Amino acid sequence: PRSSRSQRRFSPLSRGGGHAASPRFSTAAGAWPNPKTYAIVKQLLAEGNAGELQKYFGSRMEFGTAGLRAAMGAGISHMNDLTIIQTTQGFCRYLEKNFSDLKKRGVVIGFDARAHLSSGGSSKRFARLAANTFISQGVPVYLFSDIIPTPFVPYTVTHLKLCAGIMVTASHNPKQDNGYKVYWENGAQIISPHDKGISQAIEENQEPWPQAWDDKLIDSSPLLHDPYAMVNKEYFKDIQKQCFYRNINKETNLKFVHTSVHGVGHKFVQLAFKAFDLSPPFAVPEQKDPDPDFPTVKYPNPEEGKGVLTLSFALAEKDGARIILANDPDADRLAVAEKQESGEWKVFSGNELGALLGWWIFTCWKNNSRDTRAIKDVYMLSSTVSSKILRAIALKEGFHFEETLTGFKWMGNRAKQLMDQGKAVLFAFEEAIGYMCCPAVLDKDGVSAAVITAEMASFLATRNLSLSQQLKAVYDEYGFHITKASYFICHDPKVIQQLFDNLRNFDGKNTYPKSCGRFKVSGIRDLTTGYDSSQPDQKAILPTSKSSQMITFTFANGGVATMRTSGTEPKIKYYSELCAPPGNSEIRALHDKIILLK
Image 1 (cartoon, rainbow, N blue to C red):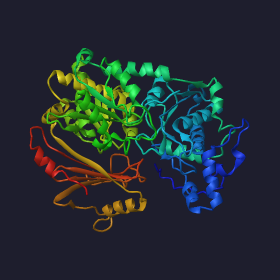
Image 2 (tube, rainbow, N blue to C red):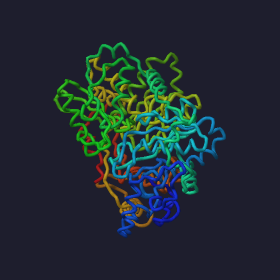
Image 3 (tube, rainbow, N blue to C red):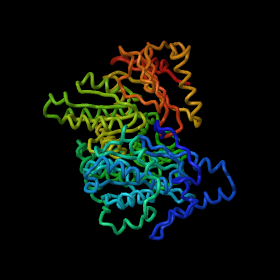
């Protein structure tokens, strides 16, 4: 992720830029910088390979609202021991400035199962180095002793009232990547201006502190705490508040398959099913155990659809399961597939599952609410590029709907604001298969989403309804919302910039396209420049960011299309949606009209 701060240039041997070329980073305790990254850089120096050295040391990873995410390897452009130490030193200093009670409250640190043999980096190693940095400054650290799902970190921040949280994960990125995700004291991901403040503090604290490399020091420290057992107990107790049909769960004959796609999710989804009195799902044996090489998939991302679910389909056919639940490697996302009467498998889009979960969670709330007047304080949220099905449900049922910028950092922070005002935030989702189904976690959570989906499916089965049939019923009642989303890979920032510049200067300076094919454009919102043609002052209401690209086109036929850049991957993403009022059953016509950006 890149913040708006310009990239800082380094010489391979400059201060803070070349631990591998300088033994001065050794410690009194005898711990040395990572010998593998040291050897990589030493070899490049011996060869005089200026090109590769420039790749490693030409520019530093930028700390943004998504934290850090990059390939593991040597140099300041990669995730490694040194850059983790530098990042944590800066974060520690920033927290000291913001919290007078930091040394009383402390921070939580979790990690997934990623590892990179050639550079010696791993999520666990990075987490321990980060813990060592805080403990060296007298800050208590709640370091999980084993791999966990990402949602456990924000849960622990709020449950223990800590100052901050760190999760070392690259989620569903390729196997060589890792990341450093940061949560604030409210349990939500950081937003501006914290990213800029942390980035500045990192630049000011690049020289590793004494004994920074010796993570063994934390093992004997009274400041080190392990929250693993406590969180495993309390988290599952809290998500049980979303369990409404325990008797149906106990008796259902519906069978489920679960895959963790070589990530951390297997154990925790099994425990979630147990907490809801559901029989455990069949686990895909080749994928249930953590494996940082992700050997059975090209991309460890269930958002990619059927290609990631091949083994799940085979197991489901063998064991007679009708529904597949798939988590990404850090278990904060969920994909769902269902076998249709035709024998084909339908993989639900993030928007479709968002519609189902939104309907289900509101229905459960309504059926269990003793005061119908409470609906005035009920909210649901989704990101601006996600389907507006929740808005349609809210308009008919009488609760509030809000849209935010893309990403759970915005939904989590807004949810906390509303909760602090006494509002009930029942649900939030984004089309990228992320769902917040339980207010105990102010971020997407694939574990709770999996078990709540299973309970929903079990309930519907008692009514002889499938998930697909219920989705159609939702659309019949609230209006069809037909969506199409995908992406293009682009590794060249100049090409991306030129593409969006062309859209902003389509027919002369500061002019946008007036049509797309035969579809007339009726409105434009550009959240990079802050322009919104629908507003009286032509200024966008949602926050804007010059460091990321995002343009939304509204069409005269009611369609909406958005193009934006990803904050964590080299992707140009596009989203389109066409909505119809309740009672319009011309689905084929809607599909034909949906705008494909190609």
